[in-house]
Image (cartoon, rainbow, N blue to C red; front, side):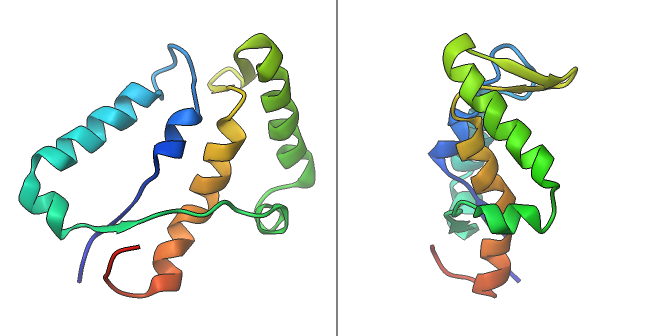
Length: 116
């Protein structure tokens, strides 16, 4: 069985400022994987696709989806917006969130191995 990684440079658009979950951690993780050439070459790389509104509503309340959309719009004006004490979003966080929400399903849809 192969191991897959679902990744996209678009995930870096989720700019959380100085929050521990930030782009530098994502980049460091990828750099670590890439530095092990054998491991990196063995990984199945899968590009995510964004979840649709309908897909999000299968798992999340409409109110929650709307709140994230609203907060990201506000972040376009203010830089960062806190959804709660531990969740910070920026203007493009919705882009990254939709990709992440649907990304794991890409592996399920693909079944086994290959690039893509």
